Image 1 (tube, rainbow, N blue to C red):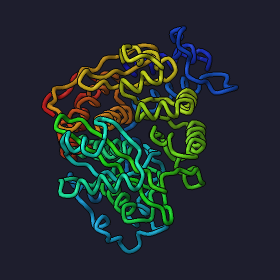
Image 2 (cartoon, helix red, strand yellow; image 1 turned 180 degrees about the vertical axis):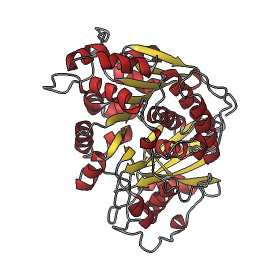
Image 3 (spheres, rainbow, N blue to C red; image 1 turned 30 degrees about the vertical axis):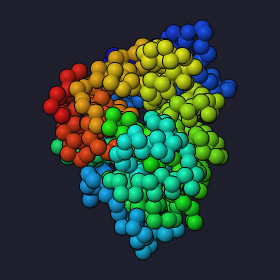
Length: 459
C-alpha cells in the first residue's frame, strides 16, 4: 500500500469528518473495545495527523529534510569504556554543564526528538549456568535495586563486556542518526535530539558524551546528586537476551519550560514506553504529546515491553489512543495492547490496532513483520540472517521505519523492507548499535530504490 495513494485520497477530503471516515473506514471487531478517544474531540486528531504524515514528508524538498552540517566526530563502532567510567569525570561536566559543541550547533528545528530513559548499558556474553547460579530467569527483563545490580556486576568480574550509552530509544536514535548522516545517500543530515534524565555522576557524563559523538544531542541538564540508570544485558549463546534494569534516582521526567521549547521545535516526537513505569512521568508525557499535537508534530510511541504494558495498561491506552500517529510494538506487545490471547496472530493484532492508530509497526522476530494501515496489515518478509545477538533488533527496526518516512518514501512495504534490513544487520553482530559503515550501505541502497519495492540484497 503506497503512501502516495493515501496522499491523493487525503487531498480530496473536503472536511475533517470525511478525513475521519476515510482513515477509520471500518470498526474494530465488536468483541474488542477501541482505544481511548480524547474526550470532547469532534474528530480524530490521529486521522488528521496521518494526513500530515503523508503530506509533510512525501515530495518534500530534500533541503528541508536535514541541513544540520555539524557532523564533526563520528562515534567509533566499538562502545568501549570511556574515561568517565574510570572515575575521571571531566572538568566542566558536572551539574548544569552544557557541551560547547552541542550548544553552538543547536538548529532551529529538530527532525526527531525522543523522550526516553537514559541508561548506560553493560552488555556481555554469558552461559546458561551463569544465569542459573544467580537465580535469573532467562529471556526476561527485571527491575533491580542497587544491591542486586552490584551482585550481578561482581559476578561478571573477569567476563568480557561493553559499556554503551544505551536504552531502547537511544539505540533507535543512534541508528537513525547514522542512517541520516550518510553522505553516500546524497541527503542532508537529519537533526536528532533526545531528552531524558541523567545524574551528575560520571556515568551521566559518559552517556551525554557518547550520544553526542553519535550525532544525537542529549539536551537535558543533569540532575544534581542524581545517579544515572543502568541496564545489564546478558546474552546467552542461543542469542537470547536477559536484562536487569537499575533506574537510579535520576530516572524521572519533568515537563519544564526547556522541554516544552524543544517539543515546540520538533517535527517528530517519539516517546519510549519504558517511561510509563517511572513515577510521576505520565503527566509529563501527556503534556509533551498535547503540545506536540498542537504544533503539528507527528507523535510515535514505542511499546517497549509486555510487562510494562500490563503494569501501565490504562496509561498506555490513554496516550496511544489519544495522541499516537505511529505505534511500534512486537507481536507479544501488540497482543497485550489488544488483550488478545497468545494464539492470535500478530497480523490480527496489527489490523485491530490500525483502526485506532494511523500507522502501526509490529515485528515478529524470524517470522517477519507487519505494517498496519486502516484495518489492513502489510506483511514484510524477513531477510536472511544468522542471529548473533537479538538485543536491539526492535530498536533498529524502529529507526528504519522513521528513516523511510523522513526521507519521503512513498511505499510502505519498501519502508518495511528497509527496517527489516537494518534489524537483520544488528541481529547479525554483537552489540545493539548499527555500525556507521552498515548505515552508509543501507542509506545509499535505500536512496536508489526510494519509490519501489526493490531493495539491495547485498547490504
